Image (cartoon, rainbow, N blue to C red; front, top):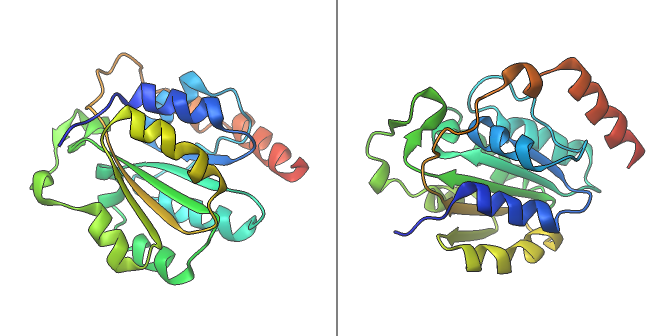
Length: 191
């Protein structure tokens, strides 16, 4: 399967984004923070794998807002059961984008065992997600973004990306700072 550059993919999403809440985790969070200047970025998920659960909480708490999670395959494996809960609740304002690169990238790009045979999209479909997309080229991704921002269906995207080149250093102090969290809360209340 082909793959695309995660930074380029996230730049395209940021370019078309308006007032959606974005929940980027780990390497996607590090990349996203270098791209986005929005105060509607929720980077405070803490433990690996918890991004999907936090995004579900935001989707339920703010059904009027589109919630986009930028998850990782390694991260999602740490909380795979969240897919069943999300599918059962079926929040129509949640878009779950999993950046697939076959590694636990934050932990040194250690290969995920049996990664070439895992189909997160099939798992999400079985869990009850309504719309399933598998994307491995930048043009398809760019054309899909407007639909993602307006859809009213629980959506799962398997976005195949290259493993990162680690040019950006994780800055967990910034990602989890109290100041950032308070600014997010104030902005979310205003919108």
